[in-house]
Image 1 (spheres, helix red, strand yellow):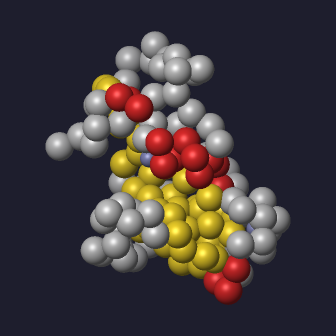
Image 2 (cartoon, rainbow, N blue to C red; image 1 turned 135 degrees about the horizontal axis):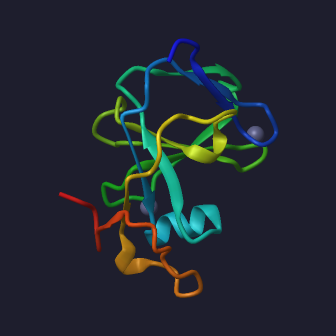
Length: 137
Ligand SMILES: [Zn+2]
Ligand SMILES: [Zn+2]
């Protein structure tokens, strides 16, 4: 990967780039992800430490702290787009939502987590991915 991966929110106010290949990717079926996305699961990818850079709209980004040590949820305050999550302990641990990338991020989700809380109205697809009732070890 030569050119940085770019992405942005729905309104275009927030723009960002990821300058190193993504590290891992998964679907999260937890209740928090269902609530914040309005969908059955969230697809996201962990970035290499220090490789995410906001190029526009830093002032539009808001952080929601779900409490209980859960990852912060960052979103655009103008259009509501979910952008990425961040560890409350280490700001370098960041997972970007796959839907905000401009182009194919190259990586594919390799497992499903928190499937114990999967939405009853959308069956888990028979895609062969590993499934974890909670977070994988
Ligand atoms: Zn926006
Ligand atoms: Zn989740």
